[in-house]
Length: 483
Image (cartoon, rainbow, N blue to C red; front, side, top):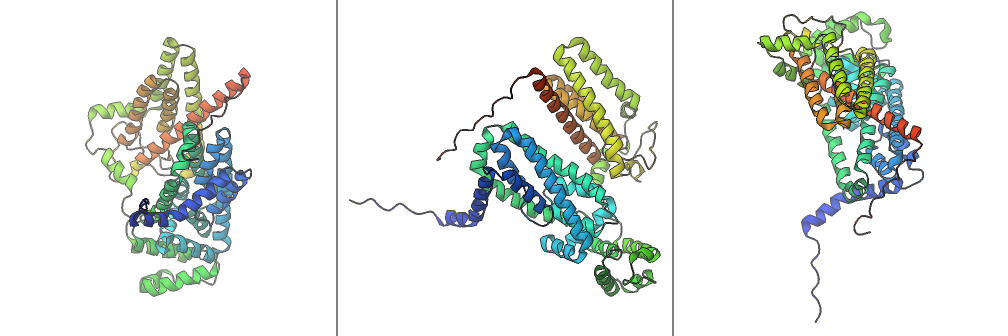
């Protein structure tokens, strides 16, 4: 008696297989390069292309390489960062030297509204815009090409520094996760790379959609973006923007643009361009408050508390906060052993690097004005209002606190939990006294944590070299099921 035929896959499973087939092919391609001797060169090429014109992010190939050779994970992250920054410079060149082509690429990838939204973001704070695009799933190439088009707002040095920081943080974070997972990473990669690819694709789509809401209302962004195009070095882009504004802007635009000629280079058009920019700002209306400003309004109380005013106002004093950290360090030295002394040394070094890097490098680059100057901000009595050139992003108090807390958590989790709790209090105090946005504090914590992890890693490698001990063997993952 013959066995009945086994039923085939159901219609839903068949449809799923058909939709995921391209992802499985991409998965196989990534895994092949992950085991290929020239995988590092492929990673460099993919990272370069993704930053200027190619839609597939390099994260998947970086994961495959880092999982296959965890001892080289940092090297692969460096290669990926270098390729991505170089590709960003190439994208900048496309926008600078071939603005109409660059605009067409952006419109094809993300749409015309997104193109104008990026222009508005660059006009508000170019450094933060590049950092945001470099670290998140937002299509980075859209911002690199647009940076070249609107180069009056985005210098090449700004693009390079912001790209190194944001892309480096992203790729080194991926490499660290691969090293932390160890042998499990290979099993997870084999089992779930298809789903990871699908998730990255969905994040790419979500990133494009996110651009559409980042620069305010699309209509308002369009007026500001077209006005910015009038200052472009490309005569074709100027003529197109002038024609569009003349048609849609009516008599108001024509009066503002009196004396402007799109055929002339924009260098001699400063006064007409200033009038057009003012007209576009008025036509667009006041921008809605962003998420950071709304969070600040919720966390910076209108009434306040006399007790909290005194406590958090005291934490605003540099001598007070430095004295608290010094007292905690001396207490650890007094009651702790050799490990505690090493932890204090690591924390102190991370504190100094975080403070110097933030105050000396990042704040002058970002140049974000403090929220104390907002009409709705409340600065408690006794807290000194900063000058307008005393920049806000990131928070130095949060950066140094994050560095110390991360060092303590990494070496003494129980003690580190208490230090981290105090670091959170310090961070909130900066918002309470009206001197920082929540985003400033969060970025400070991230900066401090990265500095502390780098110091810890450098100390560990130095100790291994001084001891002469061979590096630990690379753990081998068990073969995945079915192979």
